[in-house]
Amino acid sequence: MHPDDEVLADLQRHGSDLSAEHTLEHYLYFQDAASASEACAELEADGFKISRSGEAGKPNSFLVLAAISLVPERQHVIALSDQLEALALKFGGEYDGWEAAIVRGAS
Image (cartoon, rainbow, N blue to C red; front, side, top):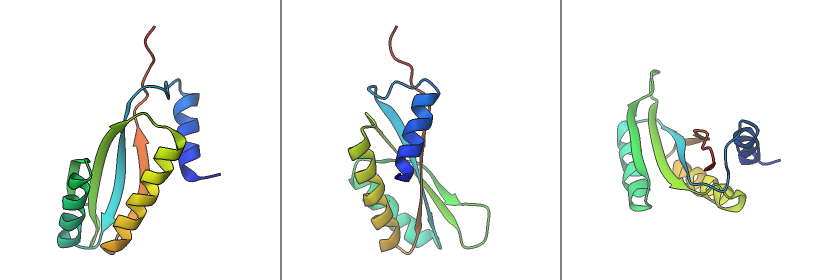
């Protein structure tokens, strides 16, 4: 099972409508501000909104929280995670997955 499958299953289990658009927040960590800044520039060029960028509360750790809105279809979410994993590695960082708020369907 892919880690993204677990997040999708949790969303569904908690009543989220996976056919509706969600805002996915992706967590990336870098060793320095320069690497985080370069990653932010690429993320923004790819359509992400940077929700937060700054020190992560421990030495040599900078968090980039990148948000994007989409319908969380499995194949697209996995491709996105793979893309962000590669981006993090490119700048010596680490991709730590994503989360999304529950989105209820129209009733």
